[in-house]
Length: 120
Image (cartoon, rainbow, N blue to C red; front, side, top):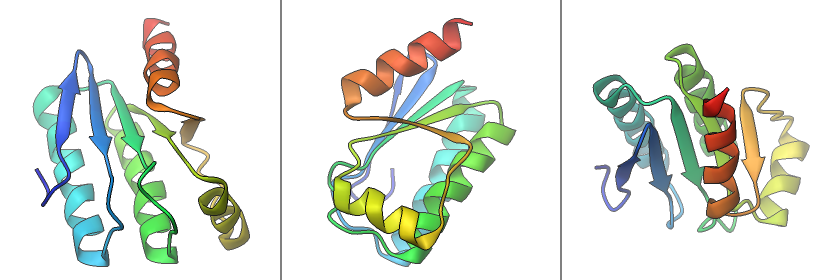
């Protein structure tokens, strides 16, 4: 667990619910913890709930994009849920396309999407 950010295992999926703004150090630590959890649990899916984000800076955006790419290299598909319109607009303006990531409006949709993807 990274600070107050739990990493929960639900079946073959890891769930990370970020309900606080991330400092650079916490974001880096979270990335390392998530990758270690994927390795330990042999997870095939990762849901990152960012509904607690009001804003995102370039470093945190890069950490999220890189975490999804790294998870994919380790065999886990990533879904980001709960993105607010302001965060989406900021990511687009910064040029982060996050090609390795699927998106869902909320946690229920993210888990359903990932369940559908993993069933293939």
